[in-house]
Image (cartoon, rainbow, N blue to C red; front, side, top):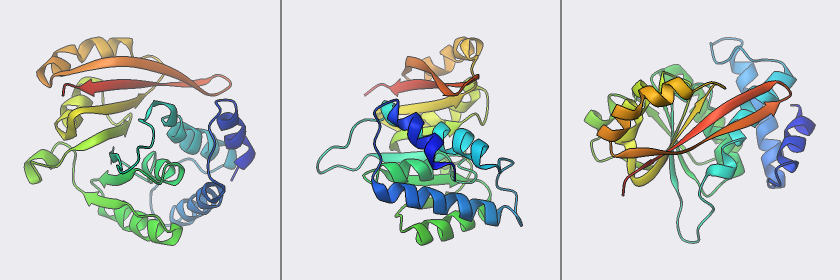
Length: 219
């Protein structure tokens, strides 16, 4: 693991992780890459790319999440988690988060369940498609929902906003140019009583950015 690259990125933003987090992230990368030899988890395999496109990308959400609150664990759903990003790094960094990893592929979730046990992390794995979940579990909602570029924004918020609790947030992790998608999404946002609070362009590395669109559902 390219620990120094991740640490420098976090240090520049005054973000501190517990010591145990670095051990867990290195172990998680090893588990992902080992499993990747026999199943399709990720096309990202070099230490540098893994640090930027998986760990830094995932941890870029940290400044936008609500802070830890005594006596409360924020619930977070990671839609289309794939190899566990951003959900697993967020759980490593913020043990107070009550994380659920959602994916439509059972093999990925089987891997993640084993990985979580080896890492000593308590998180849930849920096998379903996001668009089907409200029908399967109509009362299931979360304070926070994340998704990494799994569909265009209007379609994505149609899937995810029914899963966001009133007053909760959806964080859409997209590419650098999202202005047209944001405009197209306005009718769907209105339908679900949600608004775009802000969009944040994040520099992951020199010449590489992504945008996090912060959407709040009406209370």
